[in-house]
Image 1 (spheres, each protein chain N blue to C red):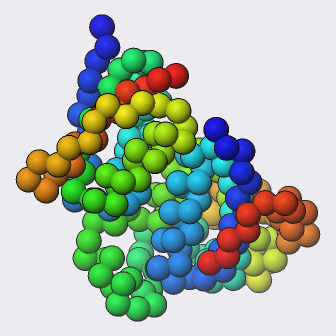
Image 2 (cartoon, rainbow over the protein chains, first blue to last red; image 1 turned 90 degrees about the vertical axis):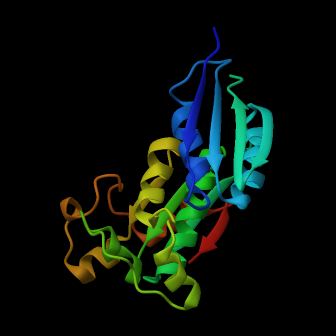
Image 3 (cartoon, rainbow over the protein chains, first blue to last red; image 1 turned 180 degrees about the horizontal axis):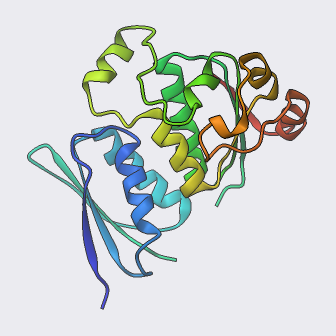
Length: 76
Length: 130
């Protein structure tokens, strides 16, 4: 069963949330998802850019009360 | 994945420049680029083992950074190595001038490198200086 893990990267700045995501990407299986919580708008733009560049899959990006929820699926 | 080569020369000891260099190194390295960092002049002594003090700010932005939770530049350089296989070289000239031994520097740094070798390795790559 694919799993989903939440990473709380709130209140840090670029590239903190991205680095948090990448460190955890190495630990999960293909098909699993990570949800990064970020208060940094720059990261909400930058994380999808990284995901596209290295070939993983964006699931969703939503903002709830100033917190970005960025969901990424490990594709390889 | 792109196979861009990025060569970064860091000579400044200011907070803003060290931070920006660390960001380029870490984001570049985890995005598939082959990253090489060369530390010389005022930048090198910040990489003495265990040195955690904040580098002096050049301006307002650097001062603001201290009050926000910006990832420390040394952590970003270390992540560039651990997550993206970046190579960080202390400049052999700067080590001689400061009488610094390899074992006094952070363990994630490579063996000292001379400018001649860095320049030949940097041929054909993007070169960034901070």
